[in-house]
Image (cartoon, rainbow, N blue to C red; front, side, top):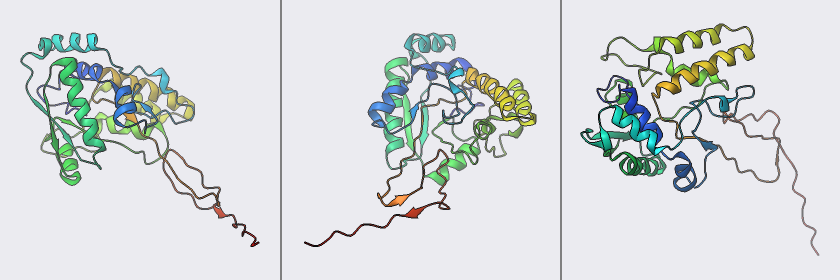
Length: 256
């Protein structure tokens, strides 16, 4: 995520440059060893909700030429004069750190930009993001309810306080776009889920055009079950519904 009030990252050209400079497929396949649903080439909403076609959303895939075009447009040709910035990361069993190291390497290789990684305990990390004390940071979001709206809610500009002295949540990036807010509100007021999804898709595209964050990958949940556990399905919300679960009796081996 980018802090939208930061003197460097408030420039959309810098944010687009960073977005095009990251090889998300490589991160998913080689850093995460394929342990993810898909590379983050669409928007902020994962491709798991029925009736919400994220493939209609144009996100960012690796394009070094475009990355350098936008960085030059921002006034930093070949990274010249770009200030050293810090990527704040909560360790997260080293997975987050490994991804951050790869992001650091790719930004250096593709943009000639130096990024320093700062490991921050989760409690301090959340506080720093909400208070706008970090300009470039790692974050993730798991929805409270299985609809696209729950992901888009963290980009709603009217939730952002006017003062940097006040905490901002859930819109940690402090992203504001009146067109996004208008479409998001129309989605909330829609009479059917189909109508709502149309507005939400349009809103999400507006946000992706502004690039207030880099979607790196969509996570995936795994569940290992003993063969005698029945009717315990997995789901995108990682909600454990035990109401229909039952144990199938284990057949005893006959003694010879």
